Image (cartoon, rainbow, N blue to C red; front, side, top):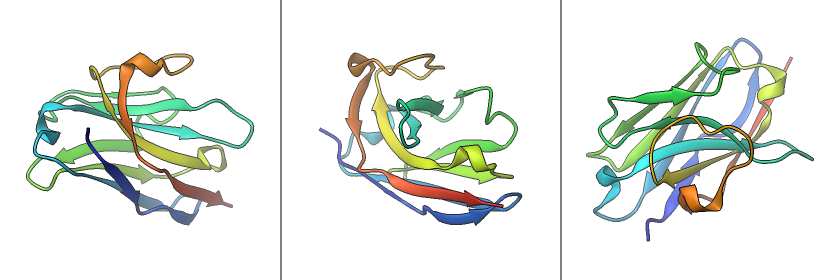
Length: 127
């Protein structure tokens, strides 16, 4: 099973930028679709973005489209989430995950659609 470790979270001002990283162990990273999810206090975990194995296809939830960018470097076994112009409502714990298939996830996250989760990294957006 792939082990995932997120980093790069912290405090960021609205209108600023932040880049999250997710480092994966194992030699099969390039075969996985990858996703970023987030969970705010008192809310369900929700989908943010996903990317297919090659990086050629990306998907976003509507609220972050045009502001966030998911990318991956298979040589470094790492997936990234570039957060530009964050808003207060983006405050959450962000998790990366391996996915059965890349795409947009609506509603509750199905356990069967996720292989492994990272431990999460806190992002706090201040005004």
